Every structure is written in C-alpha cells, then in structure tokens.
Image (cartoon, rainbow, N blue to C red; front, side, top):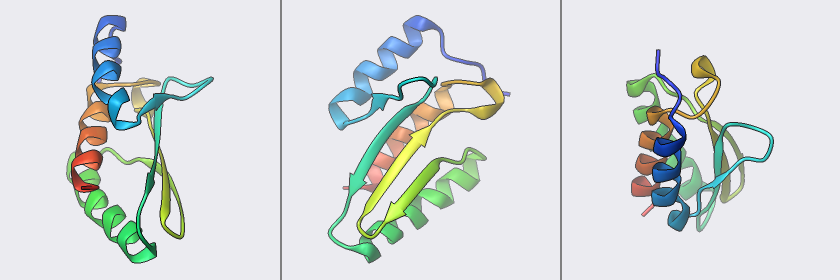
Length: 98
C-alpha cells in the first residue's frame, strides 16, 4: 500500500505540478486539473493512453469527460490522500497530453 506524502514531500510535489495547472482540491486530500483537447476523439484517445498506464500501475483516476474536456482528480483511496502514485500519474498525464 502506498503511503501518504509527508507535508514536505507534498509541498515539493505540488510546487512542481502547479505550473502545469494542477491544484489542490478543496475539502479533499487530492489534486485536480482540467485538460482541454481539440475535439472528442483527441480527448478520448488521451484517456485511452492514460488508462493503459493507470492499469499498468494499478492506480486509477477519477475523471469526467464532456466532449473535448476531461476533468481529473487524483487521490490514493487506500492511503486516504495524496501519494507518490498520484504525482507519478499526474506527470504521465501531462506528458501524454502534449
């Protein structure tokens, strides 16, 4: 089971992810970001690529897709908060979106 990030680890990770558009989720130990694509096919294709990594890492996002927009929230439910897995998946999502 993954362990929650320490306050120092969390601050460092969030400082790295904030410039990419990730932000803390109010009222939860989670981060969120909205991805926008040119159209539905690009959004769904990106979700498919992310799903392959999520399954490989056994770490699945909460997400919502409406046409060309995908809203993502990351938190490790087993740890009841943010872990290194969330940071790893956030970085992979960013890399796959370009």
